[in-house]
Every structure is written in structure tokens, then in C-alpha cells.
Length: 406
Ligand code: PSV
Ligand code: MN
Ligand code: MN
Image (tube, rainbow, N blue to C red; front, side):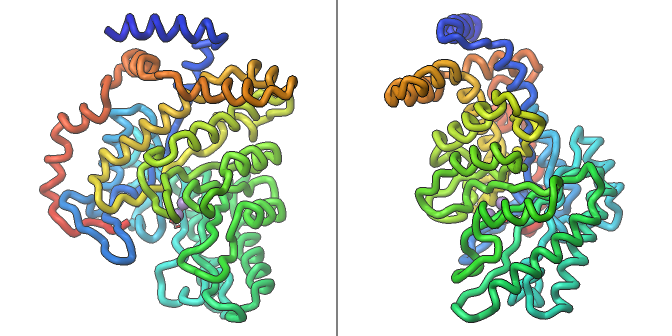
């Protein structure tokens, strides 16, 4: 059945001038990191719902993440969050991950859950609190060394709620001081990925509020510091793909935290609300990788594609599978853009033609392509169905309620 559908797909793409061999190679190279906290209990400030079968410790989080990789073939690494994933022996966690066919991905410090951080962490006016926060950043560099991770993802909740509450410029300096110390502790193969968010939990000002501030900080720190774009961290209506294009051109796009948002930092299933945005992000990435000066930092394969989700009401593992498949689908569609056609239209100032050339790729049905790829890789044709039939979801119910939160 798929043979016929695939043959038709192949013919259609050939007619559109697409080299399917290249498309397949790119799709095979795609890796999406899933977050350990996406497998834990989660919620909103109103309620954290306790589900049955949630991992009770970091080891079990990796076991759940391994299911996602096993069925999709796309998620060989898992980001950890310290101290949520604090363990006695990180070597043991690394080994456990390896036995499951996984590696440990980005190490995320947590500087927002202790009472001392009520007025900020690295931007706190109290030097003792800043010291504690900076020491935690250094601890995370050490953990990254132990587990063999090359990425440190930083998100700060630091900010203020009221005008005059604190000295914004001083806080900017303190942030730079702390990050410089961390940067200097990193090994040459490590990358610091700096995230930003315009509000929440702070409601007046946030110390790293937008991509420009993160970009400026990364520039000040040096080539191993880059910007991390969390798709949920912008004001309504922000053109995220423009930010992506800009950072690509500056060779400062380090990676993504993919998720969906409708209103704020909703952390919903990727591609659930605005799949076209996700497609257009990939279009920008692929377009930049065709530049003559593309270099390592501009190619689609060197960007850290990570999911940052916090499922509150849906079962965790299938929700993660859904996100991963949505990313895969939009990436596949973006690979079907005929860039020559777009550029030709651009050169003629043919607005409608250019827009049509991009949108046409989005409108292609990539199901036969993804199915063929899964067949070639020995993966289930329908990973979601395979998960639901696997019995894994039932087998973890014996963990009971009250597993790890976030
Ligand atoms: C908080 O906004 C947040 O969602 C950030 O996106 C971080 O990446 C994530 O939590 C984990 O710390
Ligand atoms: Mn994030
Ligand atoms: Mn967030």
C-alpha cells in the first residue's frame, strides 16, 4: 500500500525538482532531545496533577525516554535538570542511559526553586546568594564533564515585579560576572546555550527577557556561548522565524526548546497549535545552510533540537511521542522547499510566487516518506499505535502515584 503511495510521492517530488536522496539523508540525521522533566508530574500554579506510573527517580525517567527513542528512532539523548535529577553517582546514571541506548544531553541548572532565590539568583543583590548560584552553575559544568555532556542550557527566573525594586543595570553586570565564571570553567568542546523569556515568574522586568539580551550576553562571553530559542518564550505575534534567521546569520543560534504556546509559556505538545511556525523555523534553518559561508554553525545538523514540554493533563510518554513525530513531520515538509524556486521568485520581486513556493512544501503529504524511512530503519510504521499496544504504559502503573514532579 505504501509502495504505491511512496512511488506517487517520489514522482511528485521529482517533478517539483526535489532530490529525495538528500531529503532522506537529512531526515536520518535529525535528532531531537527530550527533557527528563517532561516525564515527571507537572501542572500549573493552580495544581500539579499526580498521575499514576510517573518515574520515581532519574533512572526511571530515562527508562521512559528510552521508549520514545525505541519507537521513533529520533531521540537518543535526554536533557537533565539539576537538582531535579540529582543522583549520588552520575557515572551510574550515564551507564544506565547507555544501557538503554541513550546518552545524557544538555545539563540544565535550576536556580529558581530555593527560598534564597526569592529576589533572584545570579542577579541577587546579596553577594552570598550570587555565590551560591554561581557555585551551582559550576557544579553543573562538573556534572556535564562526568556524564559526557557538551551542552549547558541556562534559563534564569531572575527579575523584578515592581519599578524601582532593584537596580536593573547592576543586575545585568552580576549576570555577566556569573556567566563569565561558568564560561571559563567549561571545556573547549562545551557550549553554553542561553535561554530568554519575556516574563514569568517576574512580571515587571526579567533579566534576560529577549533574544537580543541573550545574544548580547553570548557575544560578550565568546564563541562557546550561543542563544537558545524556546518557542514559547515570546510575546504574542512575535515572528520567531525572523529571530531564528537573524541568529543563524550571526552564527549564534545554539538550539531550541520546542513546545506549543497559545498565550504565554504554555509548554504544550510541539506543533499542536501552530505547525506552520515550526515549518517556517526549519525553512529558515535549511535556507541558511545553503549560504556560501554556512560553516558549522549554520548547518541544520549542528543545532541542538530539544523539546521543553511540561504536560499537565496528558499521559507523558505518548505526549512526547506526539511532539517528536510533529517535529519530524514539519522538518520533512521544510526539506521539500524548492529553494531555487523561492530565490527565483524573490529576484523578480514576485511576492505571490515566493510565498507559494514556500507554502507548497508545507502542503505536501509527507506520510509516505516518513513511513518509508521507518520501514528502512526497522521502526514501527505508527510509533504512537505501537506504544499504545506495547503494554509499557500499563507496566509502569505499578510505580503508583507520587512520582517525580517536573
Ligand atoms: C521556564 O520557563 C522553563 O519552561 C524554561 O523554558 C526552561 O527551559 C525550563 O523551564 C526548564 O528549566
Ligand atoms: Mn525552555
Ligand atoms: Mn519555559
